[in-house]
Image (cartoon, rainbow, N blue to C red; front, side, top):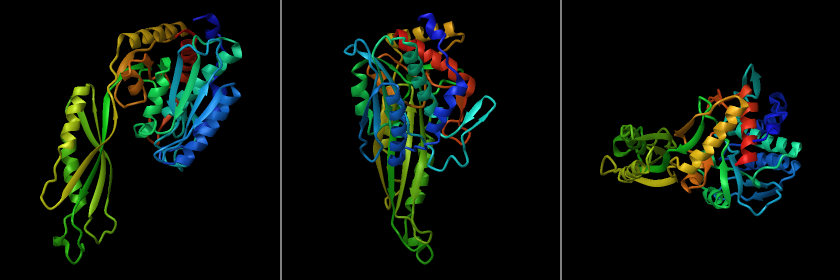
Length: 377
């Protein structure tokens, strides 16, 4: 890494106005129009930097994606893919209880930590390199996707196809709590469950009915009791019934399992798909949803981490490497065997909550780390 990268004029305060625009454009996964508005803002910012912009239409009811390709003296060589998502878990209106605000070293807002802040510093790293006339080692493509928070059901094929054309993948998901980066992620599987009972009038003929809600509650308790050190089972979504005076005919739920090893997740999948109703007068259907494969650290990925660590030490800090739970799109590229480094984004806490925030003093060193990587990998 050349000394000019260390001298690039990164400024945390100067990064905030643009990031604020991104954060205040709320973009929950299930609101395709809101995600599209966010993609338009990002596409314009990238176009102003000189990137060639392609908007990729959404499918399956999700929003579009944006691919930005930057000029390079050797455009045909395998490049660096900077990959992030712009969808969030926060519904439109979250800005009221979680407004953009800066309080000391904390910057709050929906999606500011997971992962608009990380995407923004990655783009800032590219911007500073361009302004300084410093060439990246390889052509750089930025891919911004629309459905990562629900497991990337509509974009996995796009992610894998794009990654296959690149030599390295950098993912600015949030840093680990100690500031470390991610060199592997656990396997994750989602499941959709439906219980079907028998309706009746809850006041006049309660005994004639068989409640789908009651059946699902029994299943939830049984499912979560399956959790071990090897694999977790949790139910995070449940919907049932329509009228309080009717015994519920249907109840739907979504379950997630996570394991450090693929064989443990495979066993969990078999367990979930073999679930049966607790009685003969109710029905239970279990369907497998989105799966993220296990991404295990490998030699080329650890070599990439070693490069990042040396850059970080030159800047003035250190980074650990970790395998992590909580899937990302790095699961896909890492499992493909493409050298992938994840967790390169901002430090902070409170992701997916009304306390979500990043640490202001992490913006410059993390952006500088990304700029260094883009120059040498």
